Length: 134
Image (cartoon, rainbow, N blue to C red; front, side, top):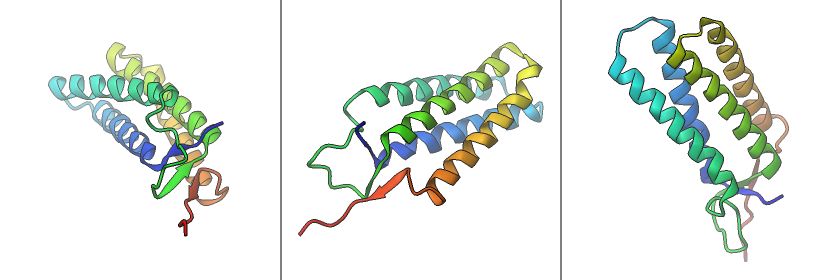
């Protein structure tokens, strides 16, 4: 399994921020239909692009990569697919108003964040720092 470039973490941060924004707006019952539509479409666009970039060569590490670090391939794919599932639940809940998906989406997001943080801080499996070449 090939590793991914460190910059792929931007997709995780962007998608989690959009899901949190959507859940806060829907949870507080704020009436902003224009903003809600923009956030829903952004989640779909960035979520699909996050999953598609897993398959492309853009974020895969090659021999000439000189970035800060690399991301473990298995962990990155697992986190990306679970986050895509949480995004699907959030958008489905928001667009069709299924209240039964609100709490599972929040729990799924909390579990994803806990798994992400534990893989970063405890297992040291997600991020590998690059060594300086002589």
